[in-house]
Length: 114
Length: 113
Image (cartoon, rainbow over all chains, first blue to last red):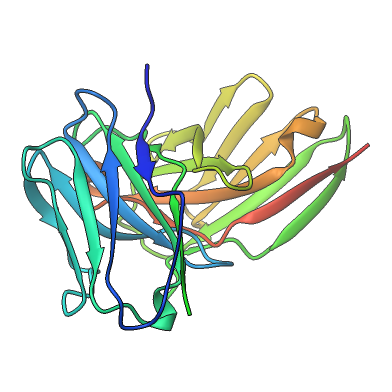
């Protein structure tokens, strides 16, 4: 079974630039999450999708972050414009359903904003 | 406000001995707890979990204990092996997972030969 795929693995951008991350969850997984992990911290939930609908985006900085999952499969997370404090690893995870407890994570995208 | 706390940033244990990783939580609404293991440059991988209706769950070398009254859980690894060297995250959820996971900051476990 293929795991959660994310790209790119690494990205370096200047502040005020835009960046987008892509995630392909495990086939058949209806629930998709984006987490932000700042160095030395645990992952923090940004947004949760159930199929192509948003379940929870209460911790997403909506003035600069946006995410979509148009067809209920792949998802993109965008930051526009980026700030220095956005430097982090962005992790995508998926589960087969909203009450499934075991989330499978991708390798993450490490973003450095300079 | 950290709802899940792992107060030991790192822990060093000799190979073959028991590793005990601790986690405390403040939100009494949490009803499911998980441990994830993370190697450098990889995403977290699920290790073991426990429901709030239990006080112990065992899987091979890994055992998780939950003390609800103390809002404390621990992960025991016996015996510790070199491949166990990684960062371990404690995570919690409520409402059947509808709100996603809340993670602690992690504990870096180092297994000494």
